[in-house]
Amino acid sequence: MLTALKNLFGLGEQPEYSEMIKNGGVIIDVRTKKEYTSGHIKGSKNIPLNSLSNNLKKLNKHQTVITCCASGMRSASAKSILQANGFTDVYNGGGWRNLQNKL
Image (cartoon, rainbow, N blue to C red; front, top):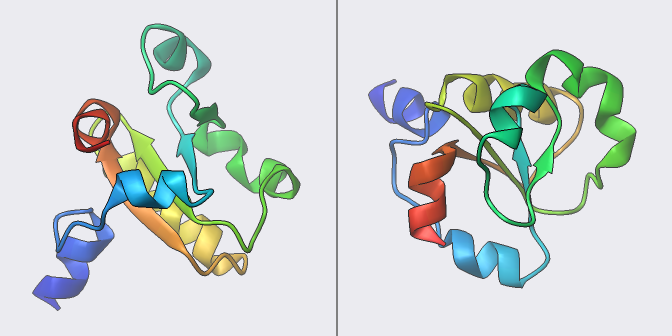
């Protein structure tokens, strides 16, 4: 159970995010538009969490998706939403600043 919680919140074993991006993965930043405008990872897409379910068609279910936000809470929720809608290769990147340091 502890491992599952760590993985849900992006605290488990960390994948090679930079490799995922090189291989066609996409970063989805689920913060608000205002938060995103104040700073974000270059090349990331902004789809606020509250509109994610309505924008699933903008994403490819067969593409690696890395979610991020300010702290990792909203990105964990985004990961769950994506997985519940058939996305199979989804990772919670946690806070965008920390994720940026891992790229």
